[in-house]
Amino acid sequence: MAGVVSQFRSGTLSRREFIRLSTLLGISGVAAARLGGFIWPRPAVAASPLRGGILNIAGRLPVISDPVRLSSISGSNVLRQVAEYLTFCGADNIAQPYLLDHWEVSEDLTTWTLHLRQGITWNNGDTFVADDVVFSLRHWLDKDARSELNALLGAYLDGTGLEKVNDHQVRLHLKRPEIALPEHLAHCQALVLNAKTFEGDFLKAPVGTGPFTLAYYRQGEAALLKARGDYWQRGADEKPLPYLSEINCLDLGGDPAVHFKALRDGAVQLVDEGLPPVSNLQGLPLIKDNPGILVSEVGTAATRALCMRTDIKPFDDFRVRRALKLCQDREKILALVLKNAGIQGQDTQVSPVHPDYCPVPTPAYQPRLAKHLLAEAGYPHGLKVELVLPAEHPEIVRYGEVLKQDAKASGFEIAINALDANQYVQQQINAALGILPLPHQPLGIMGLTSALAAPAQAPKAPADGTRWMDEEYSALLARAGGLLDVAERRQVICRLEKIQQERGNLGVAFFINSRVCLSKQLKGVPAHPNGIIQLHQAWLDV
Image 1 (cartoon, rainbow, N blue to C red):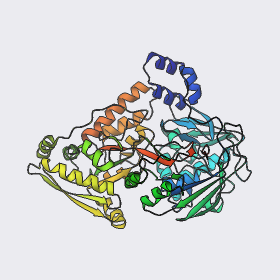
Image 2: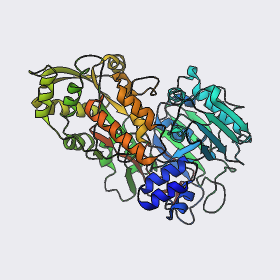
Image 3: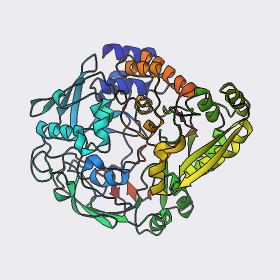
């Protein structure tokens, strides 16, 4: 740790890199700040938040049974008030211990010792112990559970690598080095489950360590959360959190305008849009300039990515892929698709919000160079391609329309095929060209990993459908995942980003801002890159 402090004080590491590396080594953010000689930023909270009150939230209430199959942020935002995670990634995208007190990691990043917080109880009175963590990990790794977590963690961990050291320690023996383990443990599906009570359906036994209990959950209608009196975290008054007495979650349907009208009229104090809330931009004018409503935004790595099948013509040729990416007028796309609620992307999944971001130039709109690349690839007279899009995502359709127009100058003739949800699911798998939603990841290396098609190298992700394989990229990715040295890892990530730009499978024209829309009476609910809503410190100033 002394070497890390020395690098920071000499200017080799930025503050964010220093905090990320310190937490990776098991040092809390507060302790790292002390070592670095600066003050750890704390959220602005009133000295005496008010207790009591009922919070009403407008959002969607999807099907919920087993948390490992959660398919929406909105669903996890309900359950995370009842159950919790081993780690938590805040708006700074740096993982901090949550149900964990701290962790220790070996120098080769293959052995992680997880130290549990003590004195935590489940809402049924059971004590939170290592058996619960081992049980949860085994469930996440269970292939029959059909979870993204199985693909994510299973790439480097299996049941033989789980060791219960004692009631408050669990040791993980990884099959390969993995620098992003703390971030993976904060995945929205990684809710820690009670080993004694969970039998496959959380709603039948909603036992968690969180600040609220679940009174009822009616899919598509309403859910009610009630404060528990013995939660492990304490507020500014040294009494157990939460401040709120109850939370009413109301499903007001699929029209975003209805949600925003409810906020405008005071029927709800918070809109849970999910992430990214691009489709809901049309609802914002309803609350624009309203003095009683606050809209705050934060940058993310979430995007709508241009995905090209690299195993079939014409996108098996990297020159064709690069040519199409050069047809993106990023400034125009950002304005017309997002109304500038985001930043320009560089055809890589590493965003400026990432602690491991390597600055790379933003590719310019270059139709003449694109035309030259097409000719080199054997298409001197241009190329006709079909772009398959989900009609239910108006921002994706708009992106496709802008690209179609701007790509004409290079010789691309794009036919747009916008399909309804059922048709899209069936046809996009075999489509040579599409635009897909890619979610925010807290680390750049996580996004870089999800771009690769090789099962041994990457978890399943929407981009996997491109079948991209690249030996140099794979080797560099494996190397980056095992590097503790920040400067050395940054060099590798710079090269990975460059490869994505030059011959990668994705076009990334923009990154989307996440936002939270709420009544100014509601305090303690910041915007989060993943659209996560934490309500243990929320309170109403009424």
